[in-house]
Image 1 (cartoon, rainbow, N blue to C red):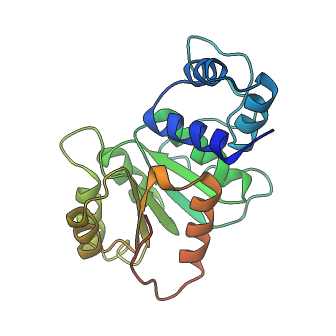
Image 2 (cartoon, helix red, strand yellow; image 1 turned 180 degrees about the horizontal axis):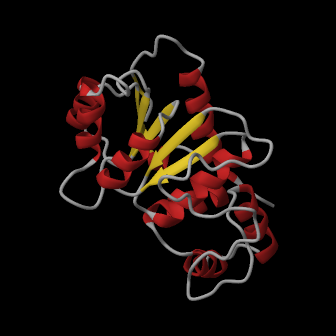
Image 3 (cartoon, helix red, strand yellow; image 1 turned 60 degrees about the vertical axis):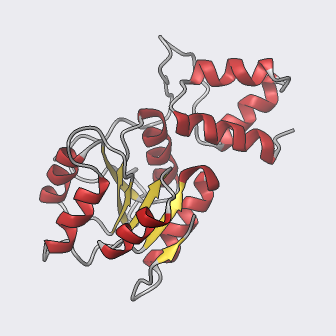
Length: 210
């Protein structure tokens, strides 16, 4: 039986960056049944195909989005364009698959430089932004850039981060974010719902969602 506890465990493990094999091994050691684990992984949009060297092997029609090639979409996807800025590979790929499955067109970036490349090529409808990124510039740097970019400053940004101090929330708001979500507090379905809510709400009003 797939329980909320099981789904929460998978979500938190993915956010922490543990690979598929490690997550499944931990769950089996904690007493969950193999069938329940596989069902829960499917529900979380994590593929359960054979694993190679600890990395996710997928049988889904999905490839990592390449900068400069437009927003990744399935043949039926004509929905809003979302840019996901997240350096954790497992979480990023899981989120990309989830949004594709919900009809969004999706592109991803792992740091400031890739984000700028994506934004130079195409304007997204919304951005999901982690704050802690590799390199000298972080998510706040991206927010600062967007605030001064006449072409991009109207694009709503939801911060999705494990940072949750009030000063981080206040700074994100000051720099133009329309929402702030703490990763560990939300399922993938809830994140999609929040994105839908922001896209359907004009003008956007800042919400500390986490």
